[in-house]
Figure 1 (cartoon, one colour):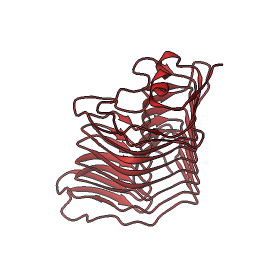
Figure 2 (cartoon, rainbow, N blue to C red; figure 1 turned 180 degrees about the horizontal axis):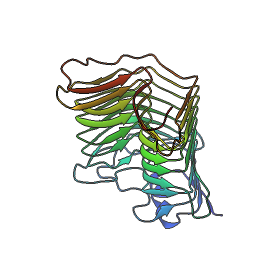
Figure 3 (cartoon, rainbow, N blue to C red; figure 1 turned 135 degrees about the vertical axis):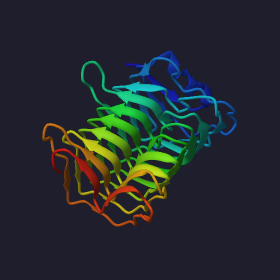
Figure 4 (cartoon, one colour; figure 1 turned 120 degrees about the vertical axis):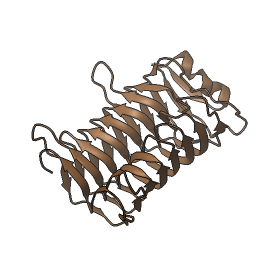
Length: 296
């Protein structure tokens, strides 16, 4: 395995030359002079290890309203990203991504993705789906990670860690800040997930919109997903007067098929749920807004 030690931006951009290597930051890297950003791997999957070694990549401020997938990395597969801070990232784009990457998944050999001890601060303004870390990701472990900032989407899904996924594990993570949109399906951690688990994690994200389904931790959970020893204290509000609205202190909606229950254990909500006046169809709950099939 190749070990490369990065100390400047020109080194950082060399990631695309070897997508399976081991990389480590040697100091903070400042991106304040960047006017237009292209991800470190615009084509192909990064499958290696990127160790921030406690350093920061900071001050990326770009306005690219006609571009999708504006993120540090492009796509990740069985990659490990650890000990990295992205500080003061402020991006405008079409979206379908997160600050860290647009997509993630396990390798063909079954090796999962690992995002460990990574922290992101910044604001993302998008037309479509947006997340604090990764757009869509599968079989990914988030351990000891955090996002702080504001996510704004015109009309799509949003989440503090990712937008949608399957069999992801969130452990000892937290998110804080706000998510805003019009027709929005959003949660403090993610919009939707099949399977997976949230463990010893918390969110104080406030979420506001006009219509949709919002939850303190998730908009939707399905297929044996679990929440344990976790909580949300963010305020939740959908203001529409004639739309389908679902709000749950932890989860807006549990979609359960074939009697595969969703489990919520030793977890709580301590925020506020906004006004429900003049809403034609409304579901809300202190923990779960509504359930579709099965039980929880």
